[in-house]
Figure 1 (cartoon, helix red, strand yellow):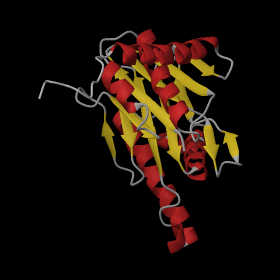
Figure 2 (tube, helix red, strand yellow):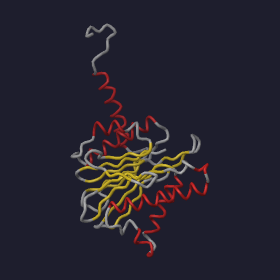
Figure 3 (cartoon, helix red, strand yellow):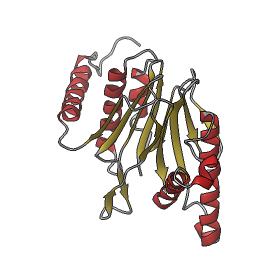
Figure 4 (cartoon, one colour):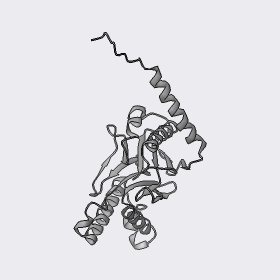
Length: 249
């Protein structure tokens, strides 16, 4: 399992993913799930993956190969004229990859190779955009009503983002919010784990404004985890006490 979040702000995009993959409690590994494609000063595109590892690695590898082979550059993320076409190309490749794997494995392979992808970025002359791509290859775009996307183990960290998100918040506050969301998920689910990968894309920057791998010894993440736990306990004890002898009806 995994946990990835892509968040749209007025100031740009903030993306974070974990790196844990497991096939049972005794087979846990670390694999990168965040990948970037950049042309400095012209575009930056970042995608995060969740689902069957072989499937997502195949999709990413094919995208990386297309950016290197001259004959394939017309299908490359480095040549796509819009972020919509970037999402379309990734969706098409994801659907084709899943279909080929299921066909090769027969009926027993159905459902085993599903994957989903968050892709965000900006191409010069256009606004930053954020998409979530489904295993079928179709996708939806973030907007005012849906300003962030999650894939993987989403349920533990979602309430944090729903309560704390503000489209006008600073990039630093957005990173803090995501760290709380990930900390809550880490505490609740062993299939999500450190280190975390962080990418901050400022509007019209066309490069990573901040990129970081957050490990077990990261002092800031440890402080967030500890302080958030203390704040929750304090908030709980500040709530009105329940009484078995209420007189309010």
